Length: 382
Image 1 (cartoon, rainbow, N blue to C red):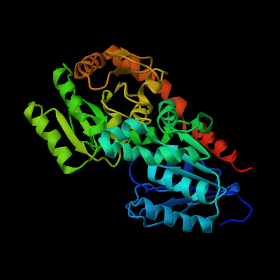
Image 2: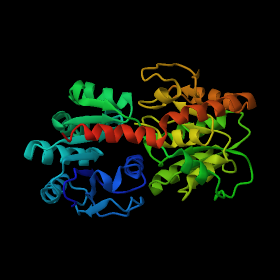
Image 3: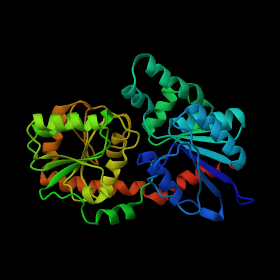
Image 4: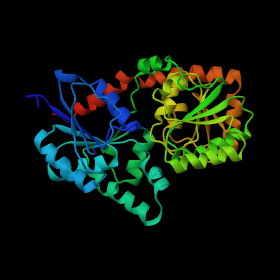
């Protein structure tokens, strides 16, 4: 550790391919570096790392094996060495461990970052007693954090309303995006060998991404383009989607393209972007598509899409809605998805919303947003 500099420690489960990991990487890329802070990242689990962090960041790898108790124990030992001025965590297990180690045991500043609309996210994963138990731990502990950062207003409100976080302890800061890098990557050769025009959806093949309804809505539409779905998932999830595609007779037009090393080159060449998600925190892939100038169709799920596309985190709709920056549809509405796909297949509509996407994406430029994070961290160092 470098002497006489505030020690900022970030805690996260691992450096996988998720949005939280990407957000952390972007925040660190714009850190004040050696001039002001001594910056560390603690990884709770020893897993494959898909993000490269800046050289000035010291990385510590623990072996918690996805166990909360081991995470708390190993993190406590590590932070007793690092003695952080402030500790920032991302994702639920890291957040819980951060609060216990720094607030309840050592009384150090602990900032937790929630990346998902937690109540709807957990409701998709569990039911009954398991759902109550999954909510219990963050409900009991999040309130003790020095601050809870939500990645969207909807996420922040959810923490206050459903997880007992005092409103005065909350703050909303959006995800930062490196617009220049995304555009540069978008101009690289397209790794998708598809000759026909296509629209694109991006995300893990999970229940929350709702690709089943997306495929059904697409099949009912008059869309002249193919549909490309970028993302991996469990084998059974991919098999179920492929079975649906085959049953609907669209195996020539709907492509489960899997993981792309450079998704931006694939997205850049699409006609528009579409999402039927049942819940989000802040939809990274959607915003990245907007950076690339793609028009957007998105479900009005909790939370993020309406806040981005309509500047309204409390928007309620019952049919396709022409928002300022894109088309919104109610969740679980195949009929509305079909209407939106038909509407966005119109050339004039595409041109209009392509321009609006580019305009809106500038609000999330990496230096502007990341500076908000660092200014906030400084407020806990006096």
